[in-house]
Image (cartoon, rainbow, N blue to C red; front, side):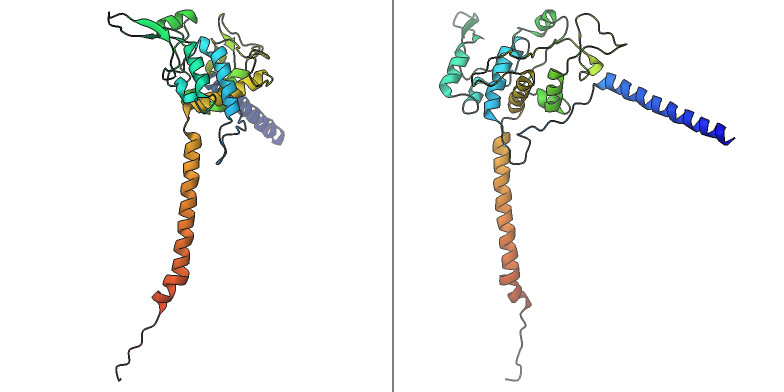
Amino acid sequence: MKGLRAVALLGAGATGLLGLAGLAHADEAEHGLSAPDYPWPHNGILSSYDHSSIRRGHQVFQQVCAACHSASLVAYRDLIGVAYTEDEVKVLASEVEVQDGPNDEGEMYSRPGKPSDHFQNPYPNENAARFANGGAYPPDLSLITKARHNGQNYVFALLTGYRDPPAGVSVREGLHYNPYFIGGAIAMPKMLTDGGVEYDDGTVATESQMAKDVVTFLSWAAEPEMDERKLAGFKWILVFTLALFSAGYYKRWKWSPVKSRKLVLDVIN
């Protein structure tokens, strides 16, 4: 009897483990593989963005991502003092043709870009974007690190997570296997390869380096005020700390003797 009971318990345990494995596999297929946590240098309480990385990330975005994706909430002038000088931004903006108008004759016209212009959408509308990408619609990347769960880690893992599908997993034609994407199949092919971009500062453009830099750029695009917010928060913490010590000093050594003093009334004299 004891032997049969032990076998039954082992069988139940094995069934439970298989069930948990099946649930984990189903969850991975439905939500995508959970991205690892990476030590982003700007995530510290008093840490700021790596502005050299922002500049390199903009190069990656401009030369790789901008062919399909837009970042319509970012203006060229936002890069001034962050990654480029004002003159450099004017040159960058002037290299882009912007549709403007209407003119005095009621017609739209093209002109060189200005620093006040926002990054241009590579497609005139959503239908054109889907037609050019096999039915998939490339999302705007302005807020992508905020719009996705575990945003920075997810985008980095997605960019570097392309691999051959495992045995038993089939991916239909036109899609590419990436375990970090929902369903494991994504229309965007692997875009980052070693040496794909030549950095201005001479940094070696490995796949992981380019992914890190473009994620840093997208993090800044989604939250450009982060450095100022952290600095302002540190200043307020410092002010409140000084105020707390001042209140403690006056409470202990100035107000305390007054509060605890004893008054004696001489009613006879």
